[in-house]
Length: 306
Image 1: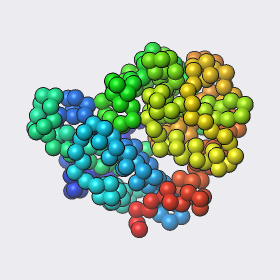
Image 2 (image 1 turned 60 degrees about the vertical axis):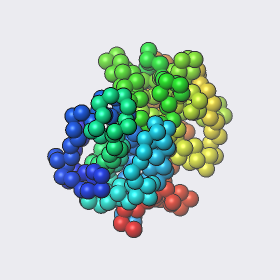
Image 3 (image 1 turned 180 degrees about the vertical axis):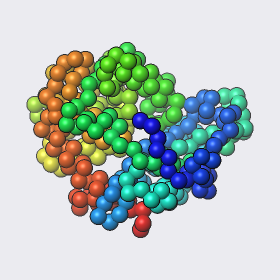
């Protein structure tokens, strides 16, 4: 989906005009994928724009950097305030927010000893990642031939830019084969996640979502869905799934900041009930929560004009 430019981008403490927000072509992370990022959504609420679970996202950004041994030049609180500033500056009632930390110019070898950590934050309008009909009509999934990397190759607990080469290969394979999204298995053949979303499968009495040990990113939307599902009386278990579990599931959905809650209509051409009742119930509850209409989760809505 093409980016619709906003006004400015925050770069290392300064607001820079969108078209002037540039980095050197020899920046270390451009060559070696040593960057960390987050995807965050701002929603319109009755009290103005609110960034959903902003502090949790920035804590994960810090954790990702720590896993890579990347020094962070700004605290969690400072980055939270910078994100709010970017959203206020954009004037957008709803938008997608992208903070990214990367090693800049200074060392072209694999060592980062002479590189400083740079930080940029952008915001722009972005619709449903998997399409406007992803909830009502569902998306088709393909089991990818590309295995998900594991904890001793590239740590999946870190939202690292270089990790997404793996996801991009799987995504392109699925799209070129006529599917909407890919499911990635780990090297043991168990379900890990999709290329940019966590996955849930519904059985007779519960929802199941793969754990971090399967190679899945610990998703903030995934955690939100678990909390919301349990709150409305749906049992959720974090456990391993085999590909065959997806084929025979009563319903399947994926979730992520960009994709929100999206129904799945098929996996490897095995048709599924779509959208299923639990998918719809969770999607409807999630839509209320992110827009500040559920007092139980009010603290997840971080208002930019406070």
